[in-house]
Length: 202
Image (cartoon, rainbow, N blue to C red):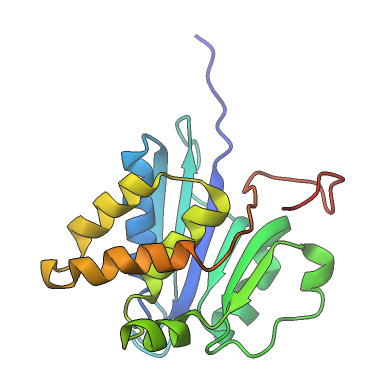
C-alpha cells in the first residue's frame, strides 16, 4: 500500500497573552476539521500569561499529517509588535502576512523582498469603533482569513463561532465575521510558491 506523504499548510497566530490569539487558533482548527481536513493545533504561552508573547500554530492538509510541527509558515497572523519581531523570519517566501497595526508600528523593510502578500490594518481599533470592544478582533480575523484564502467555508466558520462564543454575543460575532470578510478584496494562495512567481497576486 502506497503511503501518502502529506505536506500541510501552516499558520501561526501570534500575539500577547490576553489578546485572544490562542482562542483564534482553536477556532481555526475546529473550522478546518468541519471542512474534513486533517489538522494539528498547538499553542504556547510566554512566561507571563498576560503581557508575554503567546502563539497558536495550526497545520492542516487533505491527507494525514506525518509530523505535527512547522518551522516555517505559509501565513503569519500577528497582533502585536513583539511577536512580529520574533516570528517574521519564519514566514515562507511569498507567504501571507496579516498585521494588526493597532499595536504594530513597524514592519521590517526586508518583508517587501520576502513577500507581496501583506495586509496591514488596525483591526483591533476598527473593532472598537465598530462594536465598542476589541474582544471580537479574533473572529474578525477569521472572517478576513476566510475571505483572502478560501481555506475553509463560511458555513463551518459560523458553526464554530456559534459553538465557541456565549449565546449572549452570538449576533455580534456573526456580524464580526462579515466585517472581517469586508476588510479586503484580495485573494491569496497559501500554497508554497517561488519568490515573486510570475503568477500575479490578486
